[in-house]
Length: 435
Image (cartoon, rainbow, N blue to C red):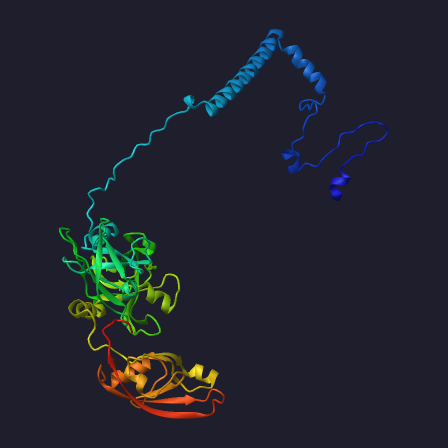
């Protein structure tokens, strides 16, 4: 820095001296612009004047004319376009007709099975769809307005159809609608509320029915693809797909039913699907779907159950043979369960709190009355439906057998005062299907 300043000569006395720079790299590389060669004109007025002087007068005139013609043409186009739009909006005669061409599916002759022998989804519809019917219920006996609907599976060519017990349980008139929309009046052969399985029969006449093919539900694998066919919400012949979410699920349909071995699936099962088919991809029915098991168990979306066909098979066969399940019995009471948790909260003993008794059953003559609590069956403690039925079955009791039991009568005013009652009653055979 000092070297640069020492070699720079300051101007003095109006005489200008050129700065002397050292002989170094900056002398050779630094670009010095010559004011005479590098002009930066700022006199725009002079420059425009020079351009005007250089531009011929006829060229200017022609340029102006060209611009005016372009503007005139643009205005003309806008005006014409506006009138055309107006005319097209208000004059139907100027509208363009569009014709859409409809083409056939390129895979029209596609095989309904894949290389492994499994049906495609559309193949399931065609192969199994005709074997599933819609069940329509009329509670008042009139056929003007249905009171409910469900689904059914054709069992045989002569018209036997399996469904859920809760679908037909309260129906005075039952109709079956086939996949081709033909309607038949159905006779209730029998139903079993404990397993939620029922059977109806139609007289097909000349109509050729297509019985379903049933598979072995013990062969079902968790994760395999399945499809549910039924009539959810009365939408005839609907199909939904999913997977087997779980197997050997012991599900109880309601508080007075018993546990049934079910297949869990995420295929949509809604009201109306009840009694329909859960089908594997080989076109075999492996379960009878039931919306009752869905709503009574968890009620979560995407959680469906179907009664495993191996468990439904003996019930269906006996209903067809007898119209009822032999050996079914009834005690003749309705009751509330007092479990351990409820006992702790209420101060009452664990057991079955009697609500009412059937006068046609032997237990009504045993000396019990409403609000008595049954606590033992054949010396086995009971506090809910399952333990009650288990105690009777463990002792090998059946319809017509006598059962020894114990109850507790609690003073309503002072629950600390309790009376123990030993009693005996006879199991009554029940062929009604209502348990």
